[in-house]
Image 1 (tube, rainbow, N blue to C red):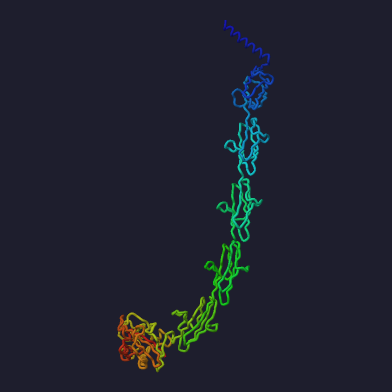
Image 2 (cartoon, rainbow, N blue to C red):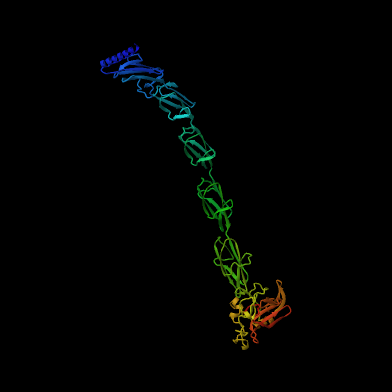
Length: 607
């Protein structure tokens, strides 16, 4: 019975639907259900019902109504996350049964605040907090106090904008904070000797917006100059007009200093002046040039410009750049004086001046002239106490750089070898020294007879005029048994060591001239500077000294207590020997002869 009822009910429903569809042209019935969240309400356009049936193809209008301070977000089908529509009044064509959900939420609240250096406000409201519909544009304004500036709008610790007028879209509750800071302060001051100011005012301190430029001006006092702008210990600018961008508080100090002073003075031998000024001291800007001039007195000359005893210039007109206080001293010296004098037996003079002294400028050349008397020579020009001649020239030119006392010494000499006129009957003149000696008491050099150079071995093996093969001489021979006969018995000039070494008329004495010296003079055994020998005084009272010398055979020196002096005369008996004079403290023998190869000294003579 129950089963039959069930089948009949199904058939009835099927029949009813068939009848309904056939009566509505094939349309189906659909059901629209409305739901909504707590912040609003949803309804059909013409019904307060929350569920209604429609035929497919019907137009359906639904309306969402949010509560106060709430916003409608959209119409959603079931649990879908994408809205079918965001319009509060939504019209659509029914196609199937659906559940429409109207979603609502609280409207965002925007609140404003600021720190103590400015204010924050809505552009269209004096309130500090506003409920703003979701998606609505919001404009806020930040206003800094005097001498302050805006940093930015912050949400929490995040800066969201640096614009004082900030526009954004409302999407959630937001607490905006406008942050401000005090504008940087620029202060200026100066050291002594100058003044400072801002270019656009006379204040010494001013607040400046960060990034703005400021110009400060430094003005030095008279006779002073600007050194630089300093921030702490650091120089930030060397120019008096300084423009810079402000980024922080800064205290600038302009430093000044007195301009350098240049002063001049001089010693008593001249005067000093500063070009362009009648004063002896002037103030000069650092780095500028100054010219000073020096003028010597008569017979004086300029030595140089000195700073702290250091010579900085030798120019009488001196230009220099000033870097500090400078005291320059012009030093002058008396011009050098050249004076001349001389020994007897000659005359001296200046080439271009009269008198025996002359004043000249340092560096000037002076020429002096010496004219010996007959029989005398200029031994030399001597300066001061010097024992060494500065010149042996008769005409001597030299540059003067200081006072000079010049002495011309004349001596009885020939070719600068001194001699003595003993008043001998022949008129023969005898040298004061042996060849090779620089003083009368020195023995001098040893020579073999007829040779003109010293040597280490005085034997026949080294003798110039000897033929060792047959033991004969090759020159100066008058007997065939001794060698080649040439009949020469007196040394010729080329073999006379006196003539070769001393030149001119000097020669070795002959045997007869040694005899004249012995017979015409007084011989006195004595010492000269601790050297023994004979003082020989001629008829006229003049004298010479012959020292002991010794002689040389082979490589040895013998009898240093005796004097051995060659003549230029050959011994005709053997032709292997020549005459010489020998003496000691007991006797003097002339006419002695010795082997020509032995070494003896020579005292030259001339007529």
